[in-house]
Image 1: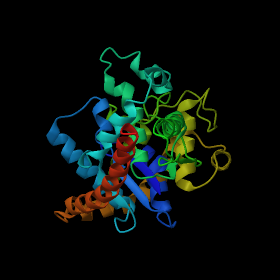
Image 2 (image 1 turned 180 degrees about the vertical axis):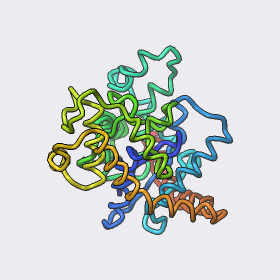
Image 3 (image 1 turned 135 degrees about the horizontal axis):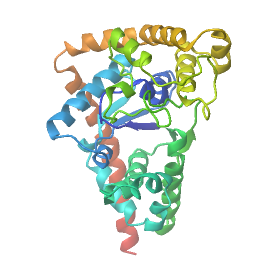
Length: 329
């Protein structure tokens, strides 16, 4: 059983595609049961929109996932908040989680402590993430480097729960690490590309038109050196573009640098825009067709909810039974 989630904070961009969605599609060729979740409860920890825009964003995200090739007959795709057992199990696990475990999380230290509007949700969302995973008896989780620590917390909570209630019901998931490119912000290459960034020029969305893609690549931050090389520390802007070309062209960064040896930044940006436009064309065309299929997105999420709810309710009932049996001993 493979579980993975994505936040509906805005339209997905090429960083989401290369880092997660592309792998989701590839996993459809495996015999594993695939459970993909639109984690709208997690999105509450970020600067949040009004309810109407959230509903729209969830549908836009679902549309984009389907346009990328996600097949609802080969996976379960659903909205997190429609399965109440996520929040229920999260509360049960939070009652077993010392605060110190959460304050040691790297993302909490980097975001929570520097945020004047810090709230409990930012601190406890790794527990909700653990609940998301454990609710479906997940065996494998695709993660990036920034999520490995959270998965380790999940494993710790498995051991804690099983020891506390003298059982072996919860099982620790394995990590699926892939050769995932770290896609950076086009305007601030020291930061990762983000759906929630205020500047639309910071990212390329999967449904961007060709002229939008060319404009964003043209205006992407580089440096005064016009040569093409890969050095993320000294040349983060150019290195980010090399990473993108290599990922979309399915080659190494070394091969990309060799290919554009003697080219300047302007020429390289033109070639990069061409590659991205070509790769995103079938996604953009599929998304356009899906927009005209009224009610299909709602149907996909409804059927996904029904399938997810059956699994979640069954496991949640067993977890409750374990806790009840232990408490009456």
